[in-house]
Image (cartoon, rainbow, N blue to C red; front, side, top):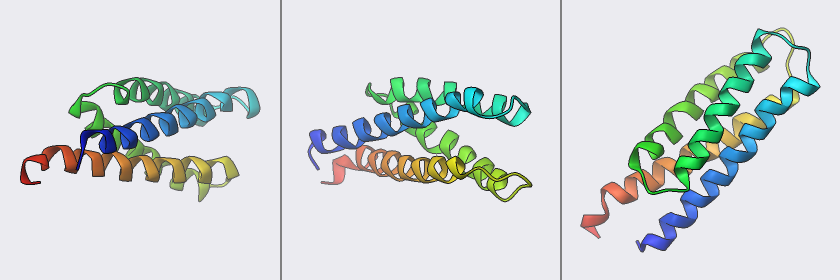
Length: 116
């Protein structure tokens, strides 16, 4: 697989992480201030940092692009099934799942590029 094809996946994952970071931080203005919204905003800050890293070439960022959104999926499902579900949570879970797939695939392709 040519390098430019995995570059497109990294750029798409970075854009989605940036979108997810914006929605997480924006929750501070649209929902009541509680521990859950503060933790979501902190996740948003991590997402901004991961989006910056995905714009580069580091494999470590690909690993964090799989692990941190994985935690976000677990927390989002728990939040949605909790006492006060928020529909924005489903959007964030879908974005996180897509980022996990994109980063995982790109990581697999970069690690196994010698076999092509």
